[in-house]
Amino acid sequence: MTNQPASIKKKGNRELQIAWQDDHVSLYSFRFLRQNCPCATCVDEWTKKKILDEEKVPLDLWGLKVEFVGNYALHFTFSDRHGSGIYHFDHLRAICPCNSCRAAEGPS
Image (tube, rainbow, N blue to C red; front, top):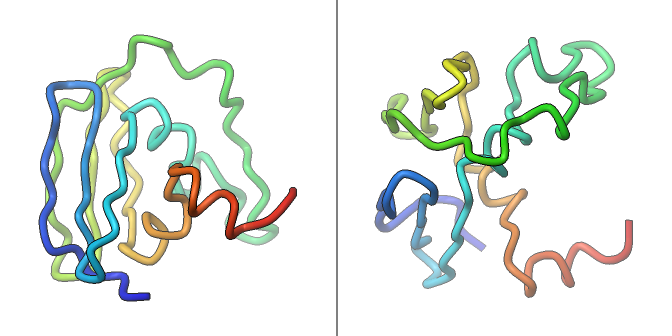
């Protein structure tokens, strides 16, 4: 598995598609990405426990901006104005919501 994207496309305001170099394609809703934000406001930096209440993320949330952070991550600004997370490509690949990735992860 490679965690480098071959292409990244914003699909409207609600979704982001990443085609990885190994030909896997991940489709993320911006709400899902916001719910999985890795920043210190959303995840305790010491315990790594999620602080963010996922249910409080608006259902109609959308992506305002997608920006590269070097060659290793993306930064998003969401319609709720949250924008402090840096999403490393490894993190994005690990949270891929597709059925085959979720099945490979096993039961939680």
